[in-house]
Length: 303
Image (cartoon, rainbow, N blue to C red; front, side):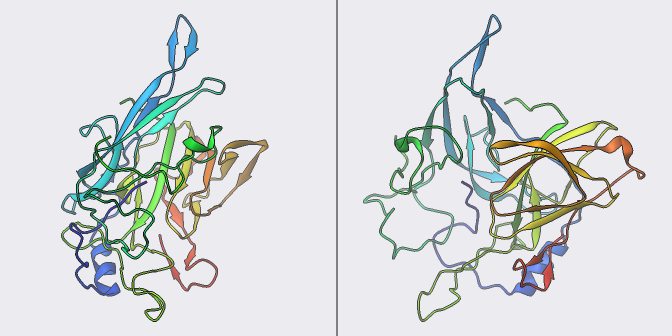
C-alpha cells in the first residue's frame, strides 16, 4: 500500500492536465540510477536448516526523491524502521513450507496526506489517525490474516538481492512542480458523487520509486520480476528487439518458458521473465510501453 499526494487534508491546488504534462516533460529521462528493491528474509538458516522467523514491519511517513530534478515528496512507506523504509516497500523472501509471521505496525501521522472520501463510514476512526491495513495476495493463510477492509488500525498498536534478480515495480505518477504528487479529487459525475474518479493516469512513469531511472546491465542473463499497482496497463518491449522469456506469473511458474517480444501487464499483475543482454546488438536499450490509455479505447500513449 502506497499513498502519495500533496500535504494536508485540504483540497489539492487546481491544476490543468497541460501543467501536469509539462512537469512530467521537464524530468530528464535516464537521469537517476534504478534503485535496487530492499529485500527482507522471511526465514533464518541454522546449520543448513531453515526455520521460521517473526518480522515486524511498520508504516511510516517519509520524504522520498522520485527524480533528481524534483523536490522531495511526502510519502507513506513500509520498512523495519523509518531510516530504511522505502517507496515502494521491501520484498519479503519466503521459503515454501516455512511458516512466516509478520507483525504490521502503524506509525503514520494524525492526518492523511491524500484527499479522502469522508462519506464512506467503513474506516473513520473515533480519534485522529490514519487507518490502514496490509492486504496479502496469493498467500496461504487463515482469513483473519488476509487483510480485509474491516481489519484496519491506526497508530498506537536491508539486503539487496543479486544484481540480476531484479524486482521492477512500475507505476505512473503526476507531479506538481514542487515535487508533491497530484491526485484529481473532482468526480467524473458530480450528480452522483463529487469526488470519485474511476481511474488515475500519471504523466511520469516510475520504476522502484524513481521517475525514468537507468540501470547498468552486464552481458549476463537477467531475471526480472515486474509488477505494478495503478489502474492502467503496460505493454512492455525492449528497444533493441530482445525477447522476454516468461517463466512465471503472479504466484506460479509456467509449464514451460515462453519467448515473447512484448509483455502486456494488467493492474497488479506480476511476471517473472529472463532476458539475455549478451545478445544485444546495441550498447543501451530502453524499456518501452506502447499501450494507449485508457486501455483499448484510449488515444494517448505512455512511454
